[in-house]
Amino acid sequence: MKHLTNLKLKVWRQDGPDTVGKFETHVVESVSDEASFLEMLDQLNEKLIGENKDAIVFDHDCREGICGTCSLMINGRAHGPQRATTTCQLHMRTFSSGDEIVIEPWRAAAFPIIKDLMVDRASFDRIIESGGFITSPTGGAPDANLIPVPKPVSDAAMDSAACIGCGACVAACPNGAANLFTGAKIAHLSVLPQGQAERFKRAEAMVNSMDDQFGSCTNHGECSAACPKEISLDVIALMNSDFRKSKSKNRKQLSRG
Amino acid sequence: MAKTQQTLTKAGKSLAPRQPVTGTALSVRKKRSFIADIYSTAIGKKYAMAISGIALMGFVLFHMIGNLKMYLGAAELDHYAEFLKELLYPLAPKGAVLWILRGGLLAMLALHLHAAWSLTILNHQARPVKYQSPRDYEVANFASRTMRYSGMIVLSFLIWHLLDLTFGVVNTVGTDNTFVKGEVYANVVRSLDRWPVAVFYILANLLLGIHLRHGAWSIFQSLGWNNPRFNSWRWSFATVFALVVVIGNISFPIAVLAGIVKL
Ligand code: HEM
Ligand code: FES
Image (cartoon, rainbow over all chains, first blue to last red; front, top):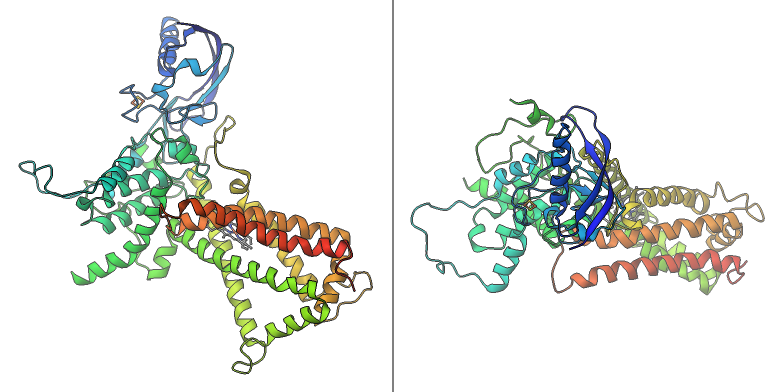
């Protein structure tokens, strides 16, 4: 186990949503290269608490790359320099002694800062709420093989379902757009037989909800490059095509009502 | 309702308080006609950009191909210009079809501009507080990040170009101070013989190429044309299209400066 020494951290500090924040510099004298980025922040926080200072607030939960709670813009990249990696899975060995590391919160109108590096991502919940579900009867669990799903289709659905809703796509997008997230959530259900009944109602509702809160895609591809689950831009094209179809299909359905 | 919920939304808009799952978007959308309804959404505006972009791409491609006639001599190019006025003649009056095409192109340009403008505003509202440290982009490239600027420079070139070779108002300063309507070949040579004009022409077309390199790929995404069978062709198509248009267009001022195309 090696140690990194003398890391200069520039950390964004902000008291609340409506206050002005600023960068604060901290020096981490020594940290194991096996520590995760969040463990390095924990270590710094323990020191701050020991000095009777406010700990740096940041989001985290599972610390194993599956919950999507951790965030952080690290040196201008969402979740730091390593591809397909959440901040909690980023290890200090990706840095070198003496490095300056700049840490900022996600920045988007729809992700207001709660404190320091923590942002409110409820805007994603609103998109899900508007249509990211299927309606199915409750009761006894149906047989697993009751609805046949071809293997490539189930794989495609899984690729989209891998989205952990961390918000890196919005954070990385120069336009603050949430097309990758919304596209993944739409694609995940719309390729499966279970998702067909509400397919177009879902596309329209989720896109509208996204539209109310986020920017618009200009096909840079930063979202997919930043995505810890490497969700493909294909889901955006799928969403665009389902949204177009929804405009006529939903009208037709309404006129039958 | 908590204050944070107010501040959650983009400038000017505020969402209704959170409600139980209803299967409908939280915002109540105004009732509009089909086209207006689609265009009111960001994705709909991207559709408009892509469709108008395709129309403009069709125009620049055929404009370039038509101008290649220049290499066959003055008579050929002037005759081609005459042919454009006589499209579908005698079924339609002389010039009618050309004016319909011009009107359509202007409408497409206006649509493209309006969509670009309003989406740019939307995008600025979506991130009112910028990142305070430098971003490290991974895949966003020069072309994708300069679409607005390359587009605007191409637009200014377009205006100059029309004043120069259609209306002739900025052409009379040419080598022999003349602009003669209908003498297309001679007008082109007189204009591009002025080296600053030729340089502007070349620069604007390089920028058009950069705009098209990203744009011609973007249309597939915007229109939702995505299929694993042809996805790998989309970048190749954009690159080849941009190259063909740029090389063709840039060859004209170079040929004039080099004396290959001369009076
Ligand atoms: C008049 C000034 C122009 C402006 C301000 C402008 C601006 C833009 C912008 C902001 C985009 C969106 C970029 C993106 O999605 O990343 C775009 C896309 C595009 N532009 Fe332009 N542009 C202009 C002229 C042109 C011209 C003359 C052509 C064709 C010859 C053209 C062809 C395209 C195409 C094909 C797209 C892709 C559409 C899409 O996003 O799906 N543009 N333009
Ligand atoms: S803390 Fe759960 S993904 Fe990072």
